[in-house]
Length: 260
Image (cartoon, rainbow, N blue to C red; front, side, top):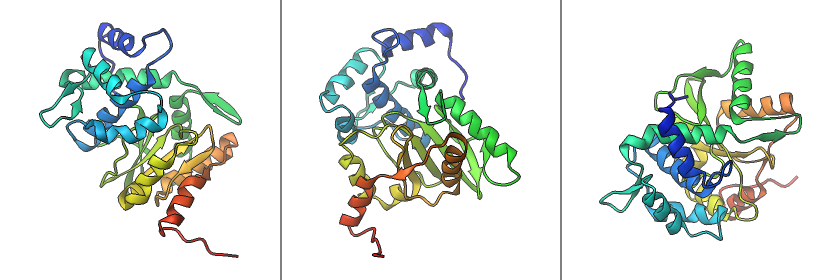
């Protein structure tokens, strides 16, 4: 995890993101998380509203993205580039990443045989990996990382990130990324469309909803397989493929199911 900012700055940013005590503005958290990941993981200079809109509507069909973006600009948490992309001001990149990590760690994951914070889950997985003679190992990431952990397995780097409402999905040429999130109830079509349209996304990115016990994953990542086994053996949680993604892939001719 990254070093914590000064307490006064940390407190100020928490107040800006939590209009009511203990109730973060999750739409704002989702937008800022996407823009921070775009910066830290791929070096991109912000995101356009159109890049955030499809998945924003999937999670918040009754909210207007433009209102959330305007509110974040008014608070000084976003600025606009000359190319009409929204970005986090340079001085706030790391402080915001630290504050969002704090907010995310305050969430509770409930599994069949356990409940606790995301970081407690990842710490248990770290310990599980270190107990084995071979297999995945916790690693120091080559890129700045927040809200998650990095692992090496079979000579490749894998990230496990906690992003409750991911609003922008992007394949990385060198990383396999598993996102622990919530899958929007009954509104998976925008996510399914992205996986159907992009082979690189299917090969590099996976979404796991631990609450629903569902995944959107077509990667060939042994780390992700190892993580699923850990969840099943330790906490009694089985992860099943999303039927919506399966149907979308079949409809596009990407997946063919053989008849018995």
